[in-house]
Length: 265
Image 1 (cartoon, rainbow, N blue to C red):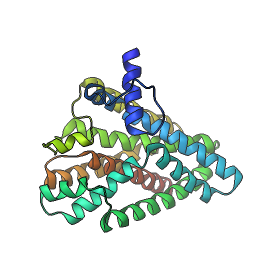
Image 2: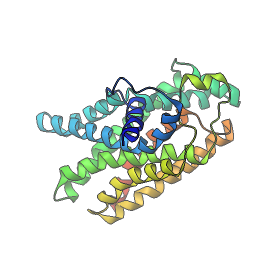
Image 3: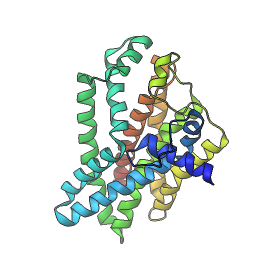
């Protein structure tokens, strides 16, 4: 039990800015095992975003509440995944070889592709989340419970899509620069089982309100498939930035898919 708590806090420390016990560090062994809790971290981030939404929805207006829910999720993760998305936009937008793409992604400065990509991503996330919550309010007898489940599901299922790449593909970097951004690169059946359990459970609970929402899983993993194929084509694997980009894109795809499901049922 103590070891599992250590693994969980390793995941919490690595993927969020939430304070952790002082004895937690970036031990490679614990970091590899922490991948089982990556979707569970999505529960925490989703719950924080929901709390921010609830407070500002009560005090001001739903649109402002959606904006502050996004701000809360960015603050709690330290823009970890948004940074990865920006790096992927810069790297794949400006590089034409594996070496060039990886070199650009290692640069801490954001370029035109990254800036434009992040702006469009956040704008799409804001509009889709706002529309999704308005649709949820009209379709449920207990909208705030559905809101909570939607936030948690979006963050958990997108993190499952991202971490599953670790289970199926090879890490792209082979030089010492990979050590500057430690990332889980090994796994056992425990990591696979834990990731899928924590990743899928919120969606299963949400589907109790409307079973058709299970179909949102399909476009999320179709998106994951094409992203991975694109990464594999250009850099023969994945990097931490690729995982962050996958999480962000799949989160938005979940919002859009759920909106589409509610529109046509």
